[in-house]
Length: 581
Image 1 (tube, helix red, strand yellow):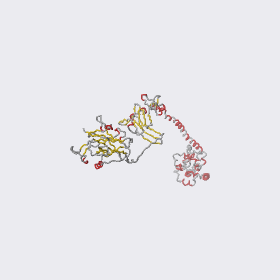
Image 2: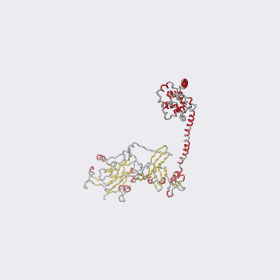
Image 3: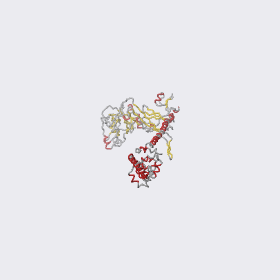
Image 4: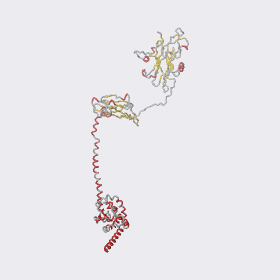
């Protein structure tokens, strides 16, 4: 007994010294055990990794249930003595369980015993609930976790000597593998670059064979002369035509020529497209009589029209004028119950003629924003002539009024003899004037029995250029137009009246009334002379110089007044004789 007590005392002293040493050297270890609690959560799945971090002593708490109540009180005092219980575990199993609770902080010490006695500690931890010792078998998988022990390894420097160094080496090889991964990718990249060479095949030269369609290979029977017959090879090429040594002709394409006189010349070859273009389906931006082909063959269509026709658009640029048009071809569409197709070529071609100014030409343009002032009548030199037509219709159905003015009586033919009611064709025209902008007008025209226009009796034929309305055989105005065969139609006035004779007796106010044959009215055997007042008129927007012959009755009374216009020129005819049959 005494020996046992002494042994126990010595053992207690040893434990106490060990605990003192542990307390002096491991006060810092509990500070880092704070990290172990985090790994406690993953402890169940991978226990081997936790042994590296002593923070996993909690798992031993699971077996503590058998003696948890008593130990909790003791661990408070020897919180750091967990390492000593490992040595005396076999003699006093009850006390060690108390220390394991506190060893949660000193996990580092259990790691020290792990290497020296790996087999025995696993057996003891089972009883004292020191599961951490069984974690000794974990050394096999330290390579991956060694990284973690390095951080908490600061408290337990002894751990650095054995386990930490070996795991560090595997860490280095771990990095080499990743570089191996990038190695394979680069080689495949190089083959990708060589794959690009095939792309140059895009500009395949074989596609150029389509050019032969635009050639000068035209059969002799289809050749059309291009340019003058004496043109040279250089001149032929200058106008975009083909030359075979003998003649210049149009090739198998669309030829555009712009002439100096402002003409488009477009020659379209049927072979200009594939499939061949339908020459009858070609059209331009606009329509018109000049937009149709001037010549066609089975192989060509030739168009020639002014640069201002067929919808051509003109644009003005500094030093140049540009004319643009577009040639298109229509195509036939076949429509079926489920779709539509076409087998014709759709052709659009933009044509342009650009004229560059190389010379300076003077151009005078008169712009009138307001009408010119009315003409001022004044005496002047105006020569007019009065003639009587004698043309006769020689063909059935001809116009007697127009035919009568194809020939006239000459001075040698006077006096002219007429029968009552025969038509007398009178013409008045200007002499020695070539201005097309002046118009001859007639004022009053009348007849009397003397070359003197003032002698009475008188009979009115025209009043202000209009037929005298009191005459039952009214004078008729004959229009003069471009088809009349005269150079300046506005220089002429024509009218026709029925032949009459003057009578004597009666009252002047009743001269228009019929009288019995035995009345005092007696026909006179007198000559008849024709007189007219003439003037020149300048047309304007408000006055076209034509007589206004359709007036209301209240305006007619003024026309019977015999007025002589001082600004007019008086013309008279030669003698006209009345005869009886």
